[in-house]
Image (cartoon, rainbow, N blue to C red; front, top):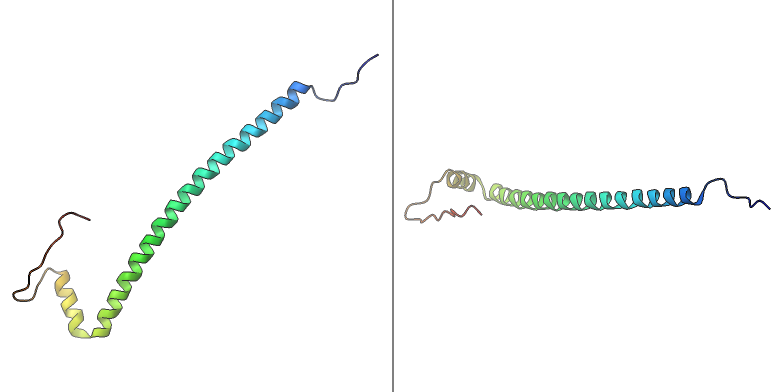
Length: 94
């Protein structure tokens, strides 16, 4: 009596299954790395946003104080100081 076998041999079905599982595993790893990279990029952009919002608030406050405050801020940015005032410079680079 002839046993009727399926259309594909068992080893071919197993090989295809292993190949599909391998592809899914590699894709999962690739997407996890991509997600981690995008999360780091998001944190960096959020930090930049926070810094920019702080700077905007400081500039807005200076504008609200009037022309004298604007001139003083510009002078300080250029390295000037008031008479008998000590200016400390952070040389650590942080």
